[in-house]
Structures are given as structure tokens and as C-alpha cells.
Image (cartoon, rainbow, N blue to C red):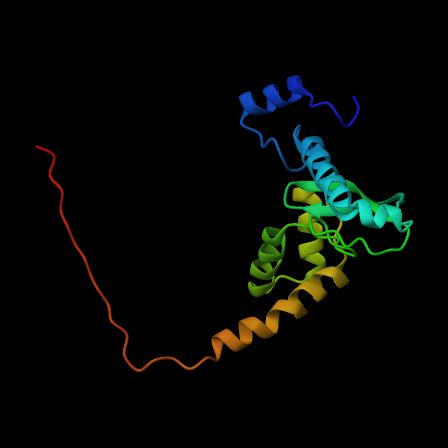
Length: 171
């Protein structure tokens, strides 16, 4: 099976058994990969307008990289242009983790006191993605100052509270 096809038998079997269609060994992960690659190609088409082409800027191959998503690992092929002015937005340059949900999960697990190596093992087991302890540390280091600032913010003296209570009888 190539990347352009969805394994419908596998998807139907996973759906019947209650397994997730995305995630580790999910049947729809190739579709996500195809959508991301198509979005990158569309961005390149929009970037290379007729003025750029007349000035000599054209496509210059693709750069392949593995990106971690909350649905599992996908391989994207980012198109390049000759003068290096293409800056993709779908999957940014040097971006290896696409899912914000994954970063949130790392922060939540880290906040519970789990070590970075244990978090790495968890993501490898659950999502079939390899995140190094250094990557997890970089994520927590980037977000931790924001959490600390939020925890130490000044609170208002008075807060309004509205308490509602009701009983509903079916007649």
C-alpha cells in the first residue's frame, strides 16, 4: 500500500473493535501525512507567483523530516525554492512537534513530578514517537516561566460568585 491509499479494511476493523483510527498503528495516519504534504505544496504554489518565477526563483527539491503529532509520527516533505525565501506556515522550518496537545500533555505529566526520561518512554509506548529527554526539557523550559508567572500573578480582592441550584422533576 502506498501513501496515497487508506487501508479501508484496517480502518473498518479498528472502528469495529473500538481502537483509535489515529495514533500508534492507526489506519488514518497516512491520510494526515498526505494532507500536511498537500498543504505545504499549496503554500509553495502561493509563494511562487509569476513575479518570482520571472526573476529566476523556482522550486528546488524537497526536504524530508519526521514530525511528531498527537496522532503519531508523520513524514513531511517541505518544498524548497532556489533563493530560500519560502517560509512554510503549516509545518514551520525546524519544527519537529506539530501537536500543541502533545506539548500540553508533556507539561501536565511533568507537573505531576514524572521524570523527562519516563515521559519519553510514555510517548514512545503510547504514540510510537521518539522524544528525547532534551526535547521534553526544552518544551518544559519554554512553558514553565509562563506557568510560574501565572501562579504568582496578583489576584483581585473581591470576586463575584453566582451559585445556582435546581431540582428538575419529570412529570
